[in-house]
Image (cartoon, rainbow, N blue to C red; front, top):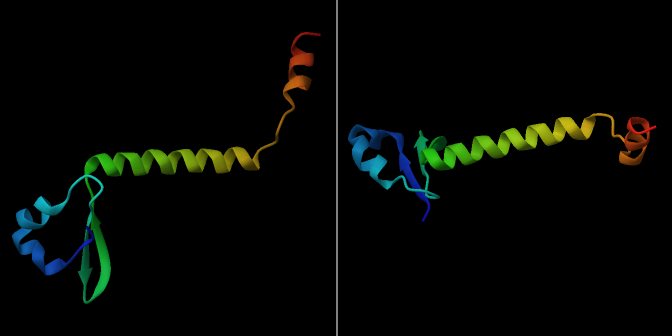
Length: 77
């Protein structure tokens, strides 16, 4: 269930934090616009790990590609 609350509800932050669950972030608005996302620490860890992997894949995609058979031939010739 999508949880959207005004940032002013942080006055009772325990109430807001109790609503944050795994796979169920709470989004906070300020002046009617999305401003913050409160997420479970496990979700945060998964997000940063996935972001790190995507960054590495993009870097690898830009690098020179090698043919395995050519490398194998050079190593064992």
